[in-house]
Image (cartoon, rainbow, N blue to C red):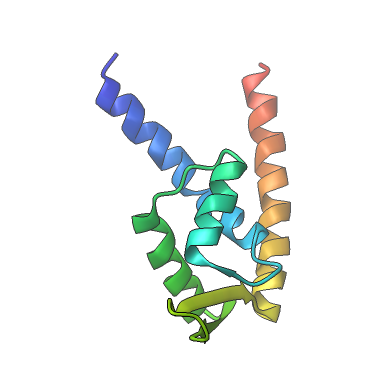
Length: 109
């Protein structure tokens, strides 16, 4: 079996879950690196080069609120779910449960 093909298909499968994983952790304010660590602690591998553009996109879509903290030597941009982001999280979470149920039914056949 082509190892590159396996890797590409696994990455494609995971890519669709990254938005849900990120939204699930932003019910409290977090900055990018702390979010990467939280995802890693939960076994969700997301590259920094994937996470930061995703955060910017979700922010631009109005699903996150962001704010710079410049009180430290290192300015950090903090993100938290907006009201719309919370609604979207609930929608995506429900959809995820439905997808898992459907696929589990197929896999058991």
